[in-house]
Image (cartoon, rainbow over all chains, first blue to last red; front, top):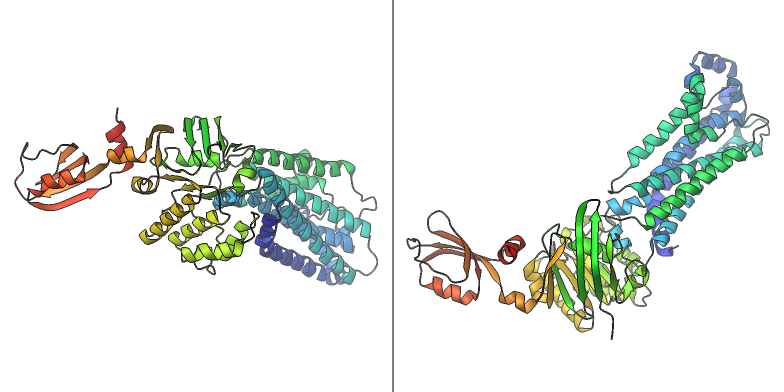
Length: 269
Length: 296
């Protein structure tokens, strides 16, 4: 890894990371702050939610109204949108640009002509990407945990909370590797931000459709969201080793492929 | 004996079926100032990008100071400075920040001093944001970054674009000074006059192939000018015979345009006997030179 490049990239992404952290943290805190009001009016709200089409609730990660009555269920339902979807968008946008930006900004001509190998560039940028995703998850999870502690009426399962956090992190990292992989496939340098965001939303949409449409259950397997379980209120909620293997396997494969492609890629500016 | 500064052997690059460069052979000695000239799309930047390991060749090989440009790229780049044709540095950085970032890639002891020395020479404001700089000033930043680590080989891709004539002169003077200290210079350009001004040898590339490798003195002897003259006298066929004039085109009235190769004083002598309303002598474009010398 090259320290100079690493530090420059950390600085370059610091503002963006801070903004994403602030926005997601605020969303989590604000949403959890409604929990007590929700509980005080639970019969009215559950009544209202029963009028909402099941599909619309599934889209927000709510499969059972009763899940919402526990702090963890309430957090998980909102976490799906804020951390899993927004966090994945952050990861894929960052990862799809971290190498490619040097090409379409034409700064690659300054970077690649330094005494630094492609491997060092890749590893430095991958480290920055990983740290950014990790920090976003850490800060937002901490914000979620502290908020839960403040609003919870009793103890909640920390193990379930940690599993939910781990799934979120794994999902975000997976989207990070997808973005990185896509960027290395680009022959001509141009931003792929819109495409990347669209991909996350489409995959989330596929996952939701698969849950609400009985005949389309199998297409859910096309989406990584299918493997990040948010059923935190289930007493049997645990880390599925197959799902863990799915996330780590695909992430490792895509990252390794990205590395190999980048090492031999013609870089135009 | 030291290895050549640049040694290119049968180098080719294809972009799918499209030609980049084909079977290029080139050897540039240590301490040489070498010109690499050709029109846009001729393959100059492709060659340079292979040397700088930004793109990979389809065939052949290239070595810098005896080292393979792919395998030994890191070692090579410690000793090479590069000015890209596009002067797009990190726009969000200030000039000083960018130059500090560049110098930290090298093991230099006097980075700050070198930054100050070169930026003073090019009258560069270190506290300005790169995005706010004009093209000329961005080019100066690009030149300064290439020289910070005192490279043994300097590769320049269209380095004077955007530089005003005064700065061009400062730049060429600096190149001469650095060359005297032992720096090899590889100057890629489409401007023949600037290559003629500083280089000792020149390779002309067209259509991805090197079509001529010349000493600059030989090229000077063939010096070609594009001449347009408007005569006051009535002109008819045969009244004006100029040896060395080719591709003569008679324009409206008494306007005469032609390519002239030979001693410019002889041309002036011939024209001095005529009543001249307007006379323009200019550098021909590269395409015009190629058409003139290499049409066969």
